[in-house]
Image (tube, rainbow, N blue to C red; front, top):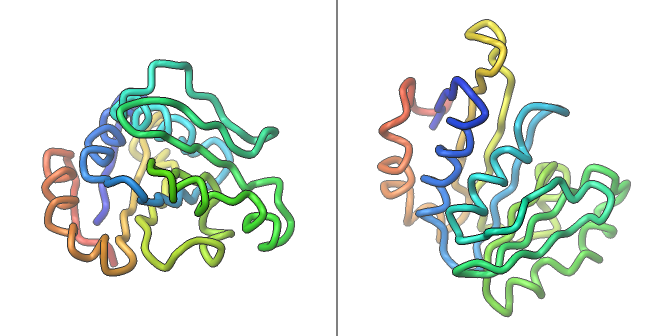
Length: 165
């Protein structure tokens, strides 16, 4: 599924709609170039989970954990060179205690997580405007496959929703 947003605020609102579909134990892997809006997405996502703290990029700390209705673990694996380093972050163990993990640059570390996650690619859509983004959603694994309809429903109100190639 592909969706377009026209501003950072729309990207946050879209992420909040996606957060309405997640369950405790879920992993969301974000992909995209520098400055594409991954942290902006994380901000809207975390707010929808009840996080009241300011959500910032964990580029240098690697993982920020927040309290909300469910624990929210926000990771950034940009600076990691090897898959083993992502495994050493122990995000799966954090999820054993409940909560949701959102991993920026997660496409580079997908093998470190269970084969059940929501993959989200965020791209600048400068042809449509300076703040415009194109977000591609791909559910992976049995848990997310069972929620495709719910995810599609959450995305349906966003203009330009279409099936992913």
